[in-house]
Length: 196
Image (cartoon, rainbow, N blue to C red; front, top):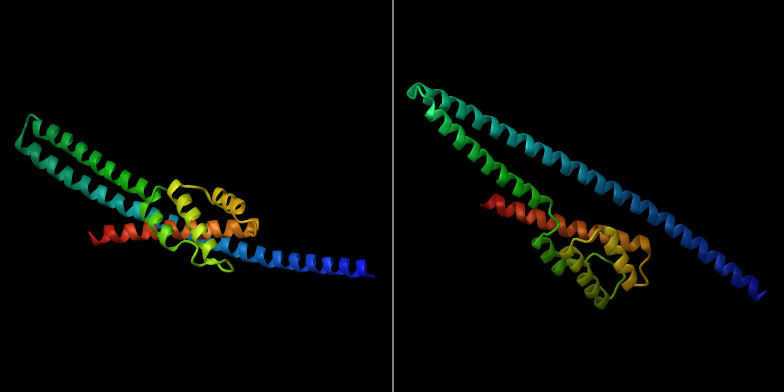
């Protein structure tokens, strides 16, 4: 009879765990959907930004063409035109280099502002952990942010350190915390550029 009760308890515990996993999977699916929507929105924003920049280049080209026509009227030998072309190419090259550097910085995982945020704020939203675990988790997340770890690598490191974290929970924390750090770092950088 005792074995039957133990077996029943074990079965009940397994059924409760299955129920929890189904609820967790629905939550994870909802979070993944939210991140997918966020990245689709972000990609539309970047494409709009690039499209807006295109108009700046076309305006510059139109101004340059007008200047070249005026210069040609003053210099029948074309020396002014060649000098103008040379300077225009140099200006466009400089502008393209600045734009490329800004775009690379926008997508660079080496983001000191994200690292600062992770060192200060990471793991604040994680529930059902004590303060010691929170501090250890914050240090791991900050290290992962600093070293550009993927979500999967951060989740693996957390699972090795904290046995009580399920694979799903570790992955969810990794996605949330790295996403928060990089989003905050990028937003802070954008605000600083806007203020300049």
